[in-house]
Image 1 (cartoon, helix red, strand yellow):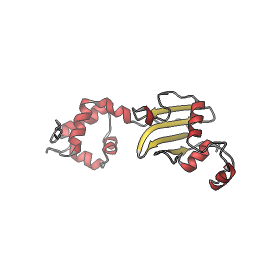
Image 2 (tube, helix red, strand yellow; image 1 turned 30 degrees about the vertical axis):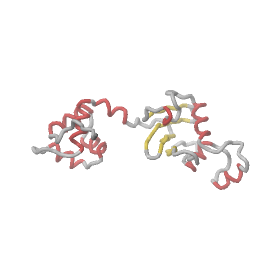
Image 3 (cartoon, rainbow, N blue to C red; image 1 turned 180 degrees about the vertical axis):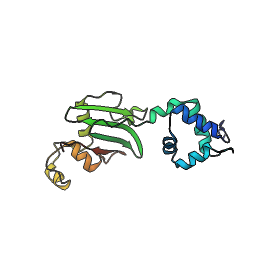
Image 4 (cartoon, one colour; image 1 turned 90 degrees about the vertical axis):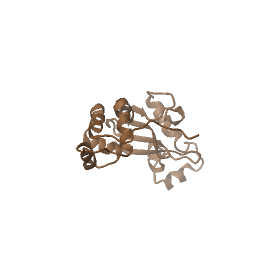
Length: 186
């Protein structure tokens, strides 16, 4: 049996403006959110015709549940290192770290604990962060470690540097890490 859904066939300029108003998005932010151009949003909002397509359902969802967007917002970067812990192409956890002050902040984008960098831990310690990094690279005790470091062009064993080079990829899973590092110490 095919599932049926109650969904709008179309939307209007008023409903799109209402969705933006309830979520507090500018036209540019709304365009970025739904991957359209600003002129498209401008055209929709000045139209006196029915507007068709996925935006009809999205506007309806955002008007009814404007707080849903809060879950998807990427916080401002306050620390020099930002890591995107990924599963395939999905963001799981955003990790911001400040090694100089040994501080860390995270934001989870997945509900399932298996897909979170720190599982059930919402406010990991810096030690937990260091252990997490080390878990995403080869162990310190690895045989022929110096050869591996030489191949990676690294002078010594440093989990962050290894993760930056390897993206924290492990042979047995589809998790990986994209690192943005503006740390002046490095």
